[in-house]
Length: 171
Image (cartoon, rainbow, N blue to C red; front, side, top):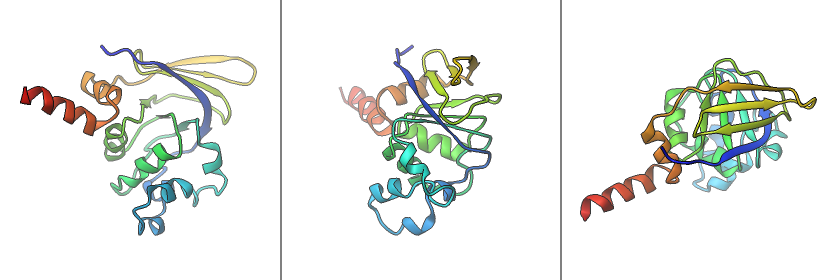
């Protein structure tokens, strides 16, 4: 098992069925400038949301990342500075796109949280702790990630993972 650091950050809470069109609207996909995607992230949901994302952990409801398979949704989340995503469930395509970029993901079907709560996540144990403003805490167990998924995240994404694996085979 790989050793991972704990991630701790304030929560930005979103609802159910946040689709890739809400994450990054199609009108911004005409450009290949990924920073523009990050600058307009969640714009159709809340025009002020992108200003709160840098350094946060997104906590969402069920079916996060549903809709089209656009990889730009995960890229924009990464470039916006989101530290991790905790959701009741993820769209499978979004899950893989985010994992391929080494975005830490925690699937917690029964999580309860409010904006600004302090979230602590451990990829090593899968524990997710929510601490509210009154210092009350609740700990949840995320669905476990496979050893390979943890290795992809620890190596910085799928491309570095593949490059390392291929260099071992070349020897």
